[in-house]
Amino acid sequence: MTRILVVDDDPQILRALRINLRAREYEVDVASDGAGALKAAAAHAPDLVVLDLGLPDLDGTEVIRGLRGWTSVPIIVLSGRAEGADKVAALDAGADDYVTKPFGVDELLARIRAVTRRVQPSDAPPAPVTVGKYTVDLAGHTITPEQRLTPTEWQLLEQLLRNPGKLITQRSLLHDVWGPQYGTETNYLRQYMARLRRKLEDDPTRPRHLITEPGMGYRFQP
Image 1 (cartoon, rainbow, N blue to C red):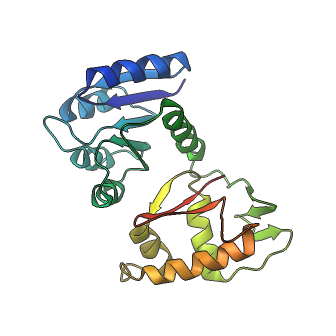
Image 2: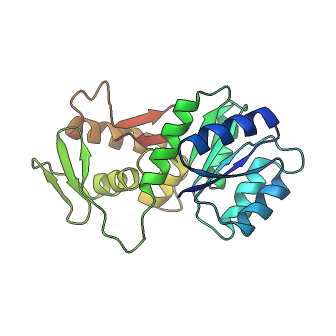
């Protein structure tokens, strides 16, 4: 059974999420502040964390960094902070996704499913991924029906496809694909994402799978 740690200082949200998640057969732990969250995570290692940023003792980004010091557990931020800077800060600290309050329970559940699907043993070969009418074999670097990609296009596509449903920041993509000296060359990302969409999307002007999150990054939507 998947264990989820929900961290929020609003007792109504804690109660609502505990009821909804348990109804869907998740095991649920709750904490109302940052110190309690870190203690609960250490005592009963969760499979996923749903975390509010506005906690009474610690900022949520500090909790994320505290968790990232010893675990790679997926973290979904659930916050009333809608500013792009707050989202980017949380994602750069190590969060896997960001949902803005007020939120729909169905959307949050879909994000939870998407994040948990991508978690797999590190030594397991990646399964083929479907992108529209194409099947992408990341291990063999082949696409069926045949479609040729440049090495840089492959690296960018791999980063997205290995993390289905996860929002990956522009900074992370630039660092991982082009190198640590790149951090602001977002025009590279726009150009290469446009190329990938022309090759893999049925309608590149209305992409369904290679999604832009304006001002933040990109997401592969299966």
